[in-house]
Length: 68
Image (cartoon, rainbow, N blue to C red; front, side, top):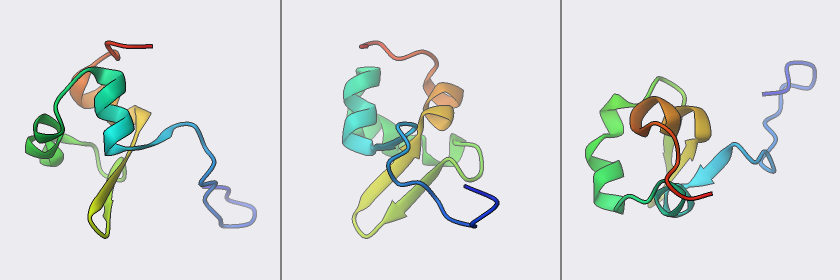
């Protein structure tokens, strides 16, 4: 979050849809959903029916990505 203007940059490459994250980490979407409670606070959030995660959260839960 940009503290000066109090906005969030939705173009930030560290924000990923759950689909993008699962592809990059080489995991199934059900694997991500089963681990929702393991994510550090503020690194995953549901918007409607879609999950948005941060790279920080994915690294904390699943380690390094499998695919680059």
